[in-house]
Image (cartoon, rainbow, N blue to C red; front, side):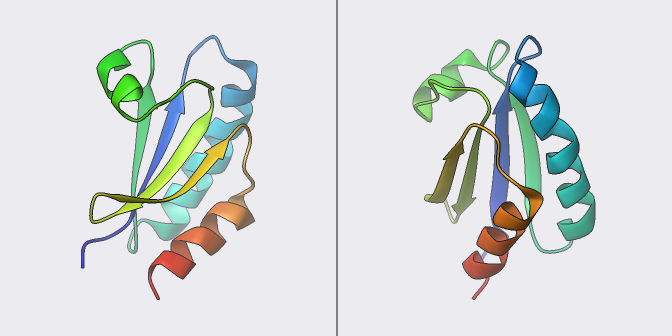
Length: 90
């Protein structure tokens, strides 16, 4: 199995995205060995955002082997994200 991927769909103008960013980056540093982390700017990656059905920013999507496991719309805590990544590894 491949590593899970946590994607953070954000926009530079989005206030809550600015709050989510440091949480996402701290988690990425702590869990870089077990998961991949990608930040996706919806203004620059509009096609990908549409393909993933992103209507709210921030939206975080956890995928493994191309299958969506979890989706968070709005702010998510580091613990909530870490727990979901760990569960996806079981």
